[in-house]
Length: 157
Ligand SMILES: [Ca+2]
Ligand SMILES: [Ca+2]
Image 1 (cartoon, rainbow, N blue to C red):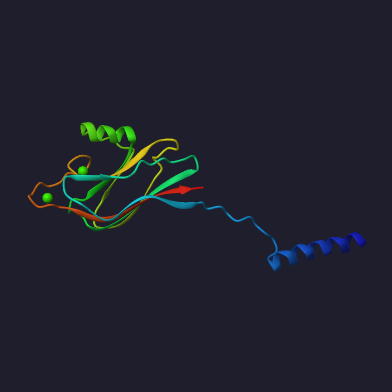
Image 2: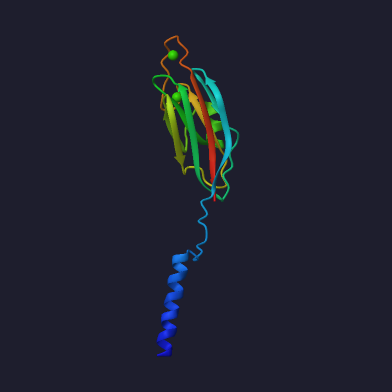
């Protein structure tokens, strides 16, 4: 009988703790997005490209996000490339395009996620309005320039 009452008290205590919200769960660590480089109100003429600072994802970086807000783009679009430093050097010196990731942008708002940057590597993000890569310009005598904001974030956990 005594044991039964004790057991009942135990159940009541547990129930009252649940109802009063006293069970503390550890907060989920969602990490944070850290801005690494950006372009503001940037105008990129046809046949030109622009590139970020060197980017060094650390071992606590588990995702990369590139946000592009484009108010004017050529009808054929323009490109965002993620290159290793070696790939970037090959492009600058030899016009050879190889990338770890690439996206095509038109007028509008975009959020691109990429897992192509490996911790410990060295990268650049290139924004391209040239004939190289996947999108060619149109050589119609008119400067099909882009106007955009772009932000590069690392997700740090
Ligand atoms: Ca291109
Ligand atoms: Ca043109």
